[in-house]
Image (cartoon, rainbow, N blue to C red; front, top):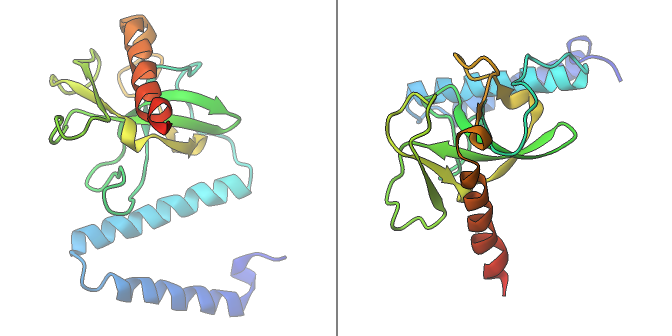
Amino acid sequence: MGYLKDDISSVNSAKGKLSSIISELGEVDSKDALELIDWFLEKSKYYKKHKQKAKFQKLPNKMERGDIIWVNFGINVGDEFSDLGTNGHFAICWSQNGFQFVVIPISAEERHPKKNSFAVNLGQIPGLPSSKDTYAKLDMIRSINIRRIRRIKNQESGKISLKELNPELIKYISKKIQEKFIDNLS
């Protein structure tokens, strides 16, 4: 198989599909539409780097369970955790399998914490920009590729370690995951 740029028929097909995307977004707020198109472009870059087996960006040092990292979640659908209006979010690294990581998004803006029993209050985390309490969003746990991970600015190791700050938080999150996802199965 050759490159897209060398296949005129496929290039024309791609142009038609890109035109259809613009038509679909015609009645969406222009700022939001352009942000979504930027995300398509960013995701295309991730895809190209993956296909070309390009070198990874500089990552946080020795990521392990409980490390807070910066993640580009992209723009998602409905109430899924999304970066609309931002350039990424903080998340807790929970596990790794090769180049895939399971992360728990965190947020300082918890709407209706009494209604969302999946939001785990972690308190204030030194090193994060907000002076508000931070919530681990267990209902938004997801698997991501390593290419979405970035270093946290102004952190020498590129991350914030919950293990160093308060190892009990990791146990608390584990307990909540057990309660919400395992114990509720029966």
